Length: 408
Image 1 (cartoon, rainbow, N blue to C red):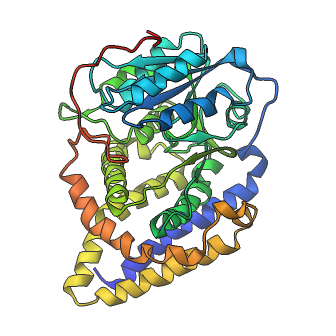
Image 2 (cartoon, helix red, strand yellow; image 1 turned 180 degrees about the horizontal axis):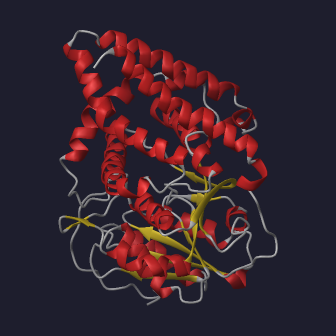
């Protein structure tokens, strides 16, 4: 493969993801973030739990204090057989707040089946809001999500994820900038077309009847009979789009999540995401042709980037052009750092949420390493059943007895 087609391909990916996306956000600005103020549905916040310790208590407290009518807001925590004291902390919150309920799976089932369990139990809810167990939600977030359900065809609305520990070390600084691009640029095209293909489990609202409609598909996700427990966010969003619904995203609904502080935690997260991308991009390929042409082009380019780029990197190494490729990555990352530095939305953030753009430079090394090593590793470990975040491992034991005060 010659250099020219490689860089032409990268240019097409850049043009589609950034330039066309920016153009759509300008042209369709009002339509992208349309709101309605007379919609006040009943809401159940569902928190899937596994080995979070005391932090789950803090998460629950932040949820029960959200700025939403208390009589229309409830919180359901579903524990996936945690092996630490997470369940006890969740039950403590349930004893203190009457609108908090704690469920426990009969055995370790994975995040998606745990959420399905909670959704089935939330019979009075019109809207289900999925919140990860390590997330702190901004007080107005639920209201901002609900306001975006302006028509029945909108089935899901996602929020903006900020890093809560941006300046802890060099790795969290790097991820802060990476989250910024993932939230505010890479999804612009999808936001403009109201077909966001991956809404984060950190903070997303769904119409409950749509989740119930899709439950058989969500419950039976597998590869050649092997259950798949990772990448549930992308899989669920893709299924919603595939069934003809709209998916939106708003920057006004915010939450805060902790970025990985160690290389082990970071690469575990990236490996899980790589597996999810491989599975869902390939499985969804027949449906890609039904998407908007620009969205279809983005979908196909991302598959190619995911599967072809490791070979491009390996070829440069074998041909002695590794430093040329490194220099290209340095230039690319430096350009992204400048975009971050001068972005009005970044400058509007409080100082503690911003980092210096030079912090993004290590991505010039981490990006090719991730593509070269993690893509093949993800491809050959698609049958993993681990949660693989924040040190979570595989478990498969029966549930312990519920402490006094837990809700059934």
